[in-house]
Length: 400
Image 1 (cartoon, rainbow, N blue to C red):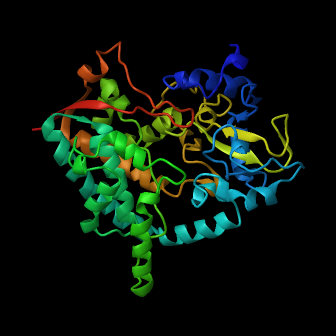
Image 2 (image 1 turned 180 degrees about the vertical axis):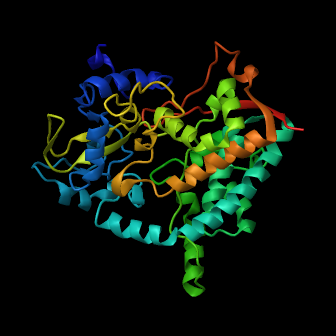
Image 3 (image 1 turned 45 degrees about the vertical axis):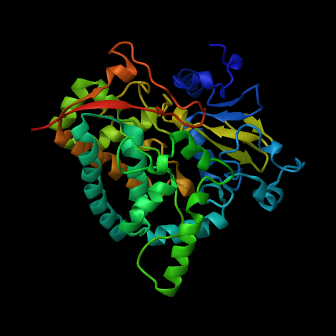
């Protein structure tokens, strides 16, 4: 493969991003690509090293793209640019979010967050997830068909997080409306289109639509403290359910053995997790995998490739629902930046699959939307950072 000819940011790679990423993971786990001067980290061991050393690899440029210096006022010289980056974070997107913070700020923020998201609160939240799952399925299953992302996943994930954060259920409809969503499948409140909804949530900080609401609630909690979490809000991507609908044998196995669902979910996350990669900025000159990395180098940390590193996972491109070491994947990150919502995402997916299988006798890909078996077509997100289908139309046969 002529790997140097491939621009990893090319949107045309979105349909099948793994061909070149798998090659890099197997042959050049740390690779300085020639198009943007970015160092791509695709090896599992090397990715773990980056994630474990935030004092060398800063998260400040997490979502900036290949060229963070186009946003900053200047590019400093030297082998340690830590002070410069910390002094200029306001120029970078999502700069007020925990995901772009580094220690010691990140340490304090995460300690507060994890101290509030207690096992007791997660258990209470899971009870809500069971109720919400059936409530959402009550809407879509009688229709016999649904676009699973808009009609189920987007309102579902938002409301699960809202419940975890202590948002009263009477405010859920308002939050959906602010996000341009509805609990009712196929509708948008106030005639808001999906494009308008997306426009509302793009920009420097995509969670601004919720700031006023949560600022007010936090002020209320200072006056009347409650045992809940109102420290912030995060978006989440729902794992791909396509494999269940596409593979009747897999679907039958899961119907017969619900205890296989958790490991099935982990293997989906490993092989086709929603995060293809994220950025780090080398703030100190270092070396990784034999590659010299000067301070100021933008790093593309490819979670998706590291999860398919043949040195870590045998036959990595093969889906094995009984893979023993599957939990070594880094779909949720690693170390201090392990996603705090990982247990929540796992519960959402496990419960959704379990109830969907219990309440249906068959789940199929909608052929009108995606074509017949053998010649399917899907509209993938046109980005090198995320991997997912924009729309997934499923048909259901409801169990008698």
